[in-house]
Amino acid sequence: EDLARLGEHHPERARELDPRSLAAVTALRELAASNEQWWEALELGRRELKLEEDADRRVALQVELGAILYEHLDEVQQARGLLAEGLELEKNNTRALSLLGRICFELQDWEAVADLLGRLVDQVRDQDDLHEHLFRLAFALEQLDREEEAFRLYIRSFTREPMYLPTLERMVVLCFAHRQWDNTLRIAETILESYPGTKTAEERADLNLRLGLCELYLGQRDAGTEYLQQLAPDSGEVPVTAPTASAARADSCASNPRDPLLAPTIHPAAPH
Image (tube, rainbow, N blue to C red):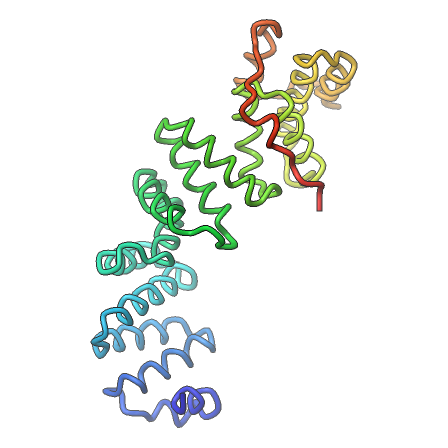
């Protein structure tokens, strides 16, 4: 604690500390990090790793350095290697699982994401960003053709945070594909009302088409027609919409029984 205070209040004196002292190197690393001197913090952390003998503290330091590499220095592959080393020593380290899961998601390594985030969500219950982990895991499972598992994880993500846009965007597609017209209506309306500036003309057309078709399937001809009339853009061009929506237009409403799985439980929160 004395070294930490020295580093905070007298950085020039802290830099004169014995570089062979673990406590001194730790204090210097923390000082560099507090000043956002990330390359210096990384170098000091590597020196600290050579001095640190406690196994738990070594893992914590490896994860910390992995976070610096990934979040501040954009050294993704180095971060991945260091975090993987930490997980070999402590396989259920939640911070390492979270960071490595994000990295593998960016690299589109879906098998790795499924493994890492599957282990993470089994352990974590009250983490603030759990809905993001659930979304990434669900999306990875979709890419692995495990759609039903993915759908249930999207529901968990939605339940944790009903206004998280990436989850809403996948839910509106999957609810439509599962012929859950009420749920599709609620979620599509939430997206259009709460995130109007984030959608392109094509994306808005796709949502309006889904809304219109859902109203028609539910027997609401006037409401459905109103949504579908919004599809004609000012330029007279025909918008391109999702293949599932286009295919659904030709379906017979009578041949599409509603799936009751979500109808009683999906209720998007009011826009913030």
